[in-house]
Image (tube, rainbow, N blue to C red; front, side, top):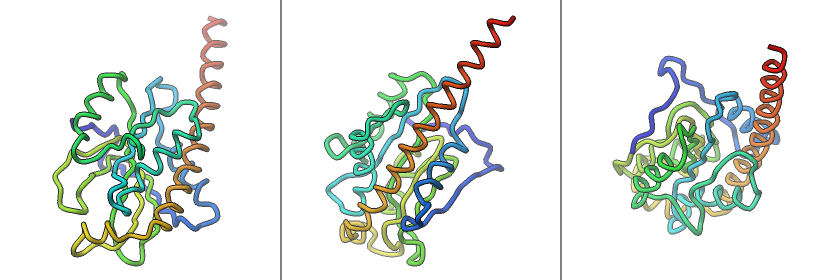
Length: 206
């Protein structure tokens, strides 16, 4: 199932954050909250794509596992080390999400390959992730927003490159993404609560 992004292609938003930037988690949180649909009562679903059978491709399920352990207030998590979302079950998982939630706002999280100088870069932006693109697989795009981490260099033998990516880098990137999402969840919760209070007050005065 192909998610329909809720952004104007002419108004694309994306921030690039180096994982070892001391303010990286705050920048990730800010990037997320700049795109979330506040006040629309849409369930926020984070789909963490990947598999622990490949070191480089484990970024998504690591993020999902750490988020599940963190106990988020508003965001729903799919894709963990125990129950991953990957090429084989992606369509099935997306159909299940759209059956369970009404008009979900989906954040796709995935590892990707890029230029050597950009390894360790985390991108938060509007529009979907395109899982499998780095290894020439045709899979449906996922999400209204994407969070991707460049874990290694692209160019040739991508599958082999992902298999031989350093777990140390992937873990550090996953932890920064998780910290940013947890912060974003708290901010989202506070803003939604305040919006509800404002709505309650305004309806009482009518």
